[in-house]
Structure formats: C-alpha cells, structure tokens
Length: 264
Image (cartoon, rainbow, N blue to C red; front, top):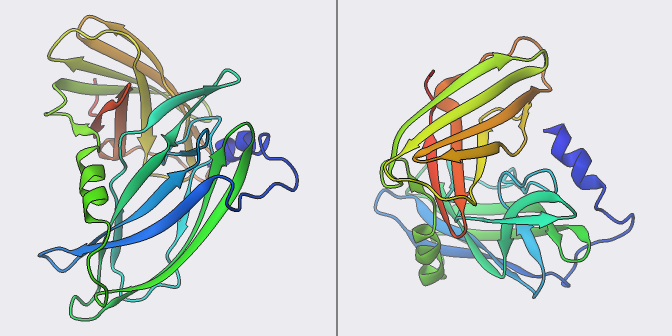
C-alpha cells in the first residue's frame, strides 16, 4: 500500500512526534467469551481537535499498524471497526475518528486452557492542525485479570456497520476492467428505498499490494454506483477473488458493509 503512505508523508513535519499532546491510548482487557476467546479493545481518548484513522484512511490519512509478534498463545486476532467519520482536509478526504473511540479486538488463543500474553506494538497517525506519527506499546496477560472496559466495548460493538441485509441492500454487483496497472472497478448497489445524497463509498480488497482510492459515488433513486481504480503494486499477474471485495457505504454516523461482489 505505497500510495497512501507517500501522500500521508507530505503532512509530517520533519521532527514532530506525538507524545501526549493528542490524548491517551489504553488496552482494555475486556472479558472471556464462551468459546474461550477474549473480547478486548484498544481505547483512544483523543484531545479536543485531534483525530485518528480508520483501517482505510483515504488519501489524506495514515493507516494504523498493529504488531502482535511478541505475543504468545494467540491463534487469531479480529477487529470490529466502529463506524468512522469522513473528514475533508485541504480538499483531501480522510476517514477516521475523533474524541473517544473504542476499537474492539477479539483474540482467539491456540490453547484456551492457557493464559494469553499480549505484546502489542502500535503505530498510527493523529492529526490536528498538523499530522504526526504516534505509537503505543502494551504488555498484559489475559486470563489473570478481572473484566475491564465492558460497557465501552459493548457500545463500540453496537456501533459497527450494518451488514447488507440489515442495511436494506437488495443487490450488489461489480464489473472489472483491466487498465494496465490493475483494474477499474464499478460497484452497482440497489437499496430497498430511495437514497438521498451525502454518501461516501469505500471499496477494499484483501491484498496489501493493491491500493484503491476513495470511490466516486453517484446516486439515482434506489441505486448507488461507485467507481474506483484498483492499482496493483505487487509482482506477477493480478487475479481478483470477488468474495474478498468489501464495500462500505458511509452516511453521517451510519454505515452499511457488503462482503463480496459478484459479476454484473
């Protein structure tokens, strides 16, 4: 994902570092689930005027990076991203959060009978009048601690995007056209009811060598059309698994997420 990193670097003052000026970041150990996994979270308490970024931050944002490499007894880590906000800075779009935001993280152990040691290194961007890189480190052992942060985590889980069915999406199809460096993608979504304007569409693909800019969105009645370019920065031939395409439609404080996009 080279393109967003290059663009975001333009916002970084040469020697700026985010220490405590942007607020605080904490790890919430949450609670144990019935299947043996742990519902935890990363909690951002951002100072007035500061924001941080969603998993797909847009051309004016910095994607967060999570390194769990020092942890033990972890089989899988899954994020549930709360619905983000759309910001405009100097004519560029970014997607993220302001104020207090809790990012739920579900951790599945290799061995449910053994405690999980979490060693997490985070790198993320924060912005106010300027944008600066920030980092945080956490080291804790799940299974030996009392529940913590439960209300905030449950509220964040309720704030995640709706799926296609609950979001009244009746159909979703995509057409792909080779463009020399990847594909041009057009997503056609049909909703149950007529749409008003003010929507931002994000198309994602589960391949770190593919960069997709924020889609150009048009609305007519119940139909939403989103056009974007999938630029490929890897080696070899690019093939697309349509089930790995994820489309998120953002509207104010609401969102709907569609997983998979068959051919038109």
